[in-house]
Image (cartoon, rainbow, N blue to C red):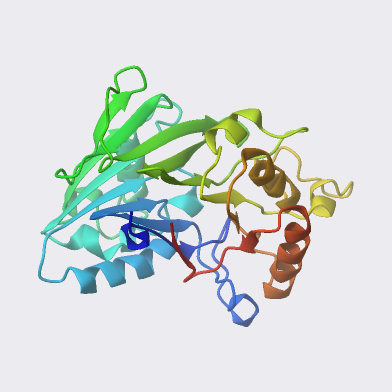
Length: 302
């Protein structure tokens, strides 16, 4: 498989809220958004403010052509949705946008997205967008499959999946219950023996999260929440345990136990400047050598 058949690009790597400014220039200040190009498929993971610049690039790339996009939402906290109303392809008549994500407190995903764009929050409503938008509730035992000819994923449950081909893109789902109240969906994208895992807004456990370790087993690229330093996590003045985020040490432990090839530290704390993140990267490398702090513009060819 050609390495250009499977490309991962980071567009937003920050957690909680966007932090523009001179102190965040190296790693970026936009909230969570990752682009995955697998063969001719465009998969976007989360719609934080990073999706705004991604949308501009996609609009330029497909200005005179139709475009099919699969957008996967890990959970519906604001920092993972706040860029969607400004995602340019959503206003393009020739765009088909398939959105997948969890229900939350009995509300379907389409209800949640509609609510975020109601008049008191947004000058344009979800129903006024010009693209063809299809919104699907995603369940933790679902598997999405993009075959070689189709631009729209098919949803299966795990026991429904039969034989797949080497041209099929397979997206597996795991639900982490470590994020407060709503949990978070983690995604694994696979093609012909190559894979990447997106595990944001998850918190480690003593001895490691065995479910996540199995989910990420032998992956080529693990993008893992690493919001805190271990000292911040256990600081008696303001402990972070239970906040639903990991330390870089938790991320490194998961990568090592899962035999991942590369670890990307993700969902940086908005209070951490470039110097702090660089220091955390250095410490993470001592625990798992092939670690790198996520930065806007980083690209990986698997």
